[in-house]
Image (tube, rainbow, N blue to C red; front, side, top):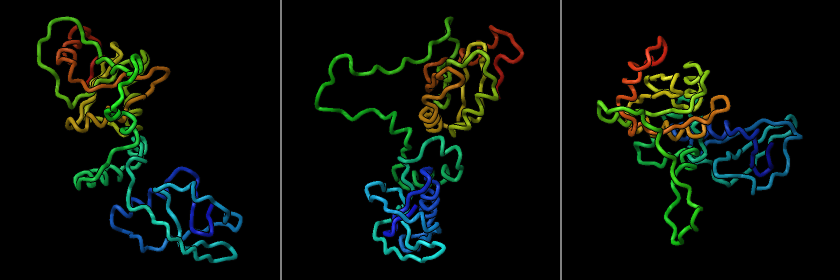
Length: 251
């Protein structure tokens, strides 16, 4: 739907707005590039400007079966990708976004995703919160009993716990890809209802933790955390204690 002033409202999925923002990020278009939309006459309607947000794309020309409308819209178009509007799920579905995000991060731009904003700590307040209103951080996954035979695993490893007992490796890998958090390798410990995800570096591991918060498999909400506090014996020692043909494959 379009307004005579050039305001445009799509289906609510945001793909047209995102395509334009990606082209701006790549330098393919600028504020002076005309934007044209084709709609039916009945789709030219009154749209309150209050419905528009910073990421919404406006149009310069509206083509209908009976009219060519020059909007003369003065509202600025998106100046690039607004990363705070992008979810981890969308990052997984659109591979080019990962490349553009990496490039803008190197340029010093704020590339914090929508999901990451939800998990950032609140800024310090001058007022002390009433007792009982501050949520304590989630405890790290419990360690296996027994002596520790090695140092801590690298921080590029992510712990995933509370896996349903009938979960298959393929189901977990599919869920990880859906969140844009596919690891380089996966260590499966199905009998212990957990897995360890190995990423290229600590930054990639931290990104995966943010993307995987709230992930469900079946009726279970998975526990996800950096595996710094899991010992190396948890990764390899448990395989020796519980011999099983598919107990602890590294995939």
